[in-house]
Picture 1 (cartoon, rainbow, N blue to C red):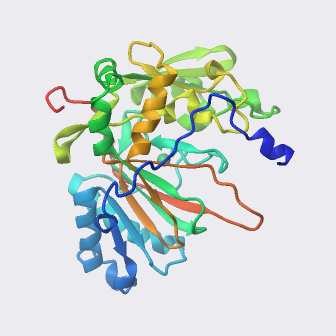
Picture 2 (cartoon, rainbow, N blue to C red; picture 1 turned 180 degrees about the horizontal axis):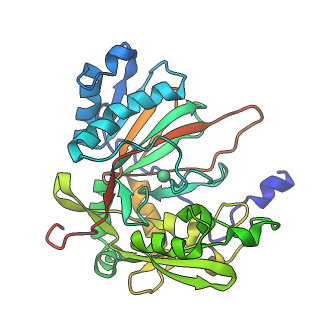
Length: 354
Ligand SMILES: [Fe+2]
């Protein structure tokens, strides 16, 4: 083991996900679409093409579409196929155009490849969330660098059967985020930095940053060194209109645990890290509760072993996603494109929809 590898070993007591504890969480036929059955050219890109109908029916029924064997290598081409579902959803919902570029608040962006990314629902920590997202297999290494998705309907039922799930239901959550000041790190290494408020709020003006944060439903407070401390109180669940029921919509990805394998943050004690997740009354989760929170998703995890050209569309209500750390050998590349779908304002759970 080299010195660099040694420094990346998780500390004792760290909870690492196990990703997928059971086979046959869902029948693969229910969510895999084989591109080899289609021409995979412009004829498939009409909204009413057989491929578009097949992908949209799969998405409606299951909330997950894995289009494989596409023969595609160009990321822009993959985006067009991902949009067959993303844009159809927007037509249903009357939403805006999909956001094509990589967004600063998408979890994967800026996360070190070597760090595992706990299961999560995209943008659960702000009021402005997304209904769906798509990943595109730009550079892939079969057998290495898999994404995992977890069947959130099964996870929701399982967590509600536990004392912890009932506590989540009753108390809700508070997302604590500490955003650093970019000016303070001009000439300093980014130790303990997750995101600067200038980058998160897209402004250099502190008053404007506060206004933007508040418009996103956050409570804000300035700390020492112009640290912007935000708090967001919301249910651990979200009402999903299509199935007319509440689903789990939170995970330890928004806790200090998120950084357990991050080179510049993992050495810090939890209370000095930029994120924390507590119950809505401010009380801490125990280690056993966090272990259960991780296990619940692991129980219903499904591996998605990437091939170049694969397109994976994920309903953000019905599935959580995450991945183990990836350790590339010299010359290896693994890179996904991301497409963020239709935005929605979180309402939390509905008391009559459990
Ligand atoms: Fe993500």
